[in-house]
Image (tube, rainbow, N blue to C red; front, side):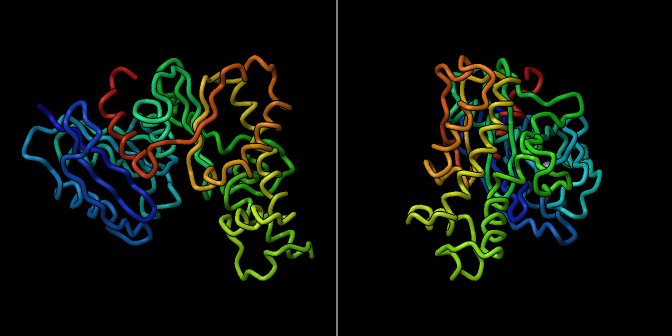
Length: 311
Ligand SMILES: [Zn+2]
C-alpha cells in the first residue's frame, strides 16, 4: 500500500495531509502558518511535510497553490501571495527533497477537480467551477478531463472581460468579471456609492464588508440590494460565455460570496437567461454550491496526484 501526500498552500496557512489509496480521510495532517510575506516559506513547507511523512511508501505529492503557475514544469510564476516565489520551481525542489513525483496546479483548478471527483459534481462529465471570494477563480472539467491548457494557464475564468470600460481588476486590466462580481468589487462599489452621497443604512459603518452588505440587503437596504444585482448581472454575462465555450451539465459555486444565496443567484439566473446564446444550454443545467468547503484544495491536490497520467 502506498500513501499520497496532498498540500494546500494558502496565503495564511499551509495544509499538508497523507492519504491511503481510495480514501479521502487523511491518516495524518498538519497546518502551519505560511507567513507568505516573510522569507523561508519553502523551509516551512518542507518541515510541515516531514512532520506527517508516513513510514509507508509514498507514491507522489500533489499541490494546490495560488497561481499564476506552470503545472507542466511545477513552477510558481509570480504569485502575489508569496512574495519570494518568483519563477520558483516548487515541484522539482520538493521532488528532490522527498524522492517522489510532485504534481502542481492552481488552487481554483484543484477545487474544481475535487468537487468533480469527490463533491458536488460527482457523476458529471462536464463541469464549470467558480469560486467567488476576494477574487474570482475557476476550474473546468471537460469530458472528464481537467482543462489545463498548453501553458497550464487555462480556465482563468475570473479574468474574462465583460466590459472593457469597467473598473480595474486585481490583475491590472479593466472590466474583468472579477472587477464586478468578487467580494472586493461588491464592497468597492458600495463604498463608491456611499462616497458619492447615496443614502444607505451602511453609512454608519466605518468599513463596509460583503457580509455587512448582505445583512443590509436582507433588511431591504436599496443600495445593498443593487450592489448584489449589479454583481449578478455581470456574473450572468460571464457565465453565459462559459456555457457557450464549455457547455457544462453543472455549475458549482464556491467561495464566501456564493454563500449569500438568492441575493446573488436570483438576479444571476435572470441575467444568465438573458445573455445565454441558446436556451438549450439551460436544459437540465444544475447550478449548485460547492460541498467540500475548506478541504477542496487539499482534495484536489490528492485527485491530481492520483490521476496524473490519465487526466
Ligand atoms: Zn483580471
